[in-house]
Structures are given as structure tokens and as C-alpha cells.
Image (cartoon, rainbow over all chains, first blue to last red; front, side, top):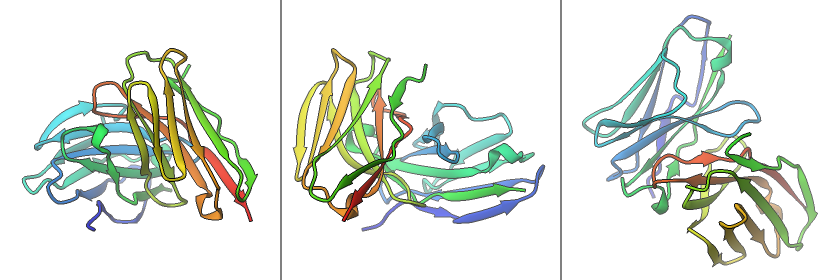
Length: 114
Length: 110
């Protein structure tokens, strides 16, 4: 079965650089969520999109922005990277009917800022 | 105080034992309760979900929610080495974004 695809799997950037993370949801899933998971930490909600519109916003820094495109894939853009941005970034998708029907998570993008 | 509290472990049990994992929470508005399993370098995988209070059973897994005590549990029967992973509880108010616990690392010893 198709899963949530995230790219790249690994990314190494220097401080103050920019990074773009991509998420391709499961076909027919119209909702995408982004989470940040620091080492040994629980995933923290960043932002979500439903039908290409931002639906909720969590602890996302102003240096980060995201959008969902017409094909429902989403991109997380991160600028002026800091060492503390090093983390695993997950996206999850759902049918828009919400968490009761279960998110499906991608395998994540591991971002290392050096 | 975090909205969701979960003992990070690690928890080591012998193969075949019954495992009990639990979380407490402070937000009485949570209505949706989930358990995720996360293997190393992988995304969380949904195991069980329940709405409001009660029990739910799926194979070797049983989820319990006690809203009056703000306490949820996951029981794993006949534990297997392949059950070794981090288990995250997660909760949601309005069927949207979810709040995770820190996860409990579980080791099943052969």
C-alpha cells in the first residue's frame, strides 16, 4: 500500500542556510501535518493544511513557512537555520476526517545543522 | 506541566510477559486517545485509537481510557521481541492536531 513519502531522507545544512522538506501524502488524503521531533523528544506539532489551506499552527518558528500544493503535496521551508533546528521532521496525512481515522506518518527527514 | 506525561523508561520485560504502558494528561478537553509505535529512524505507526472512555481490544493489544482519572493505558499480551520499540501515547481535542507523550522505550528480552 502507498505510504507517506518524505524527501530527502537526510539533509545536512550549515547555519544560516535554507532547507526545503517535501511531503507527499497518501493518495486521496487531503490533510497534511508537520511535526518536529528533537533527539529523545516527543513529536511537536508545527503546522497543518487541509485542502491546500492552513488549518492549524503550532510551535512553528517565524523562520519556517509551509504550503500545500494543488496535488496535495506539502513543502516545509526553513530559513536562517540554527543548530537547534537539527531534528527529525515528520509529516503525516489523513483524509481530513481527522485523527480518529488515524494519521499515517512518513519516515521523516533527518535534518542536521552544522 | 506538560499536557501529556509519559514515563520514558526504558522498560525491559521477558518475552511472553504482559506489558503495561500508561500516560496521564491534564487537559480534560481531550476526547481522542491513540497509541503509536515508533521503531528507530521510522515514523510513528498508529496501533490503537479510542474515543472518550472505555476499552478497546485488537489482537494482543488492549487500550483503556479513564477520563475521570485522566489516565490511559496500553496492555500488550504475550509480548514478543518484535514489540521492542518506543510507544507514544497521543491525544486530541477536536479531531485535529495531536499532542504526543514523550514515549516509553520498551525492550522485550528473548
